[in-house]
Image 1: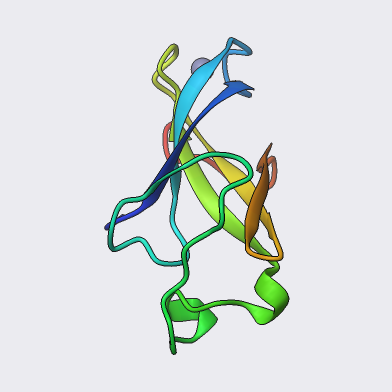
Image 2: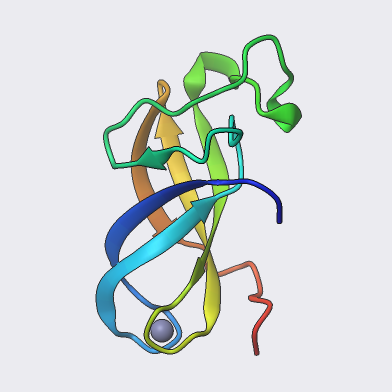
Length: 102
Ligand SMILES: [Zn+2]
């Protein structure tokens, strides 16, 4: 899936229900520098690019896609990364999007 930013966050795995820290790959915005982010950080965008190509969305508000492979059960799931006014606010499990690993 190319380059991505990353956040290491405690969350409950929707597959095995284990609570623990997981590496979450964020596949949007400026992913060229593989930035390590935390909740509350300013999210990186690419200047003068469209949103589809990593540019800044209007007002810095965005719900981006993230991907996790659970350290415990080795199964995967998608998350939504909530960005408000350019700040990474929250990670929510995306229950709609089907994982790759059965
Ligand atoms: Zn799991």
